[in-house]
Image (cartoon, rainbow, N blue to C red):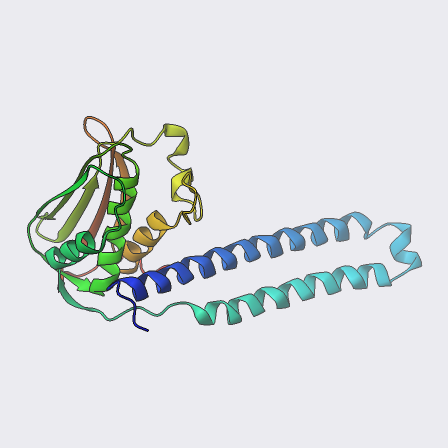
Amino acid sequence: MMSRDPLGAAEQAATAEEIVATLRHDLRNCFGTIRNAAYFIRRKVAREQVCRDDPRVEQFIHVIDEEVIAASALVDDVIGSRARPRGRTVSASALECLRTAVACARIAGPGIRVDVDAADGAVELDPAELSLAVRCLVENAAESMEGGGVVALRGRVVGGARYRIEVEDTGAGVPEAEREAITRPFYTTKPGHLGLGLNIAGRVAHRYFGALTIESGAPRGTRACIELPLAGEAVGAGAAGPPP
């Protein structure tokens, strides 16, 4: 049965992508820790009597190192092969993507209004992915305002070469101590939430040579910004490409 949510398929794919990327990163860290421990033990016992009495000690340490290397390669082959390919890239209307994001946003709280003030601009990407990224930011903003408030969604061309999207709320803002934490996968203070919205938005921005930033709103609240190159604009040599 087809999903009634126009962004449902994009959301499922993006969620799976975040889970795979997190799993791969965590496993690599675990393997690195084991290899470092094995190296330390090898250096410590290399000149000990136990190694002279039983050569299998050094052999087994070597086996541990080799097996960890093999397991790391397997993770790269199996998990890496499931990395999501870039979506359908076209010259898309940024304004239409913003409208789709608002139309599909799941806002349950009462008294929440989304105000859209956006000019158009052509961006080269998968429009479903950008719509999903903006929807994530709009939903995050709405959830931050208990009791109601206004989500301001703005879009405009800046510097003649980039399109800037701003999603600003009138909530209490993000405490300084949580600024770094909110960008971690699966970090959330809301029961029933995965805590992937900012990660999905950031990955989409990065995939299309853009960036996601989180700022303090004015005079309060939080402002999330996505900047992307306009279609046809050359990407600088130092620009970041798609994440691994």
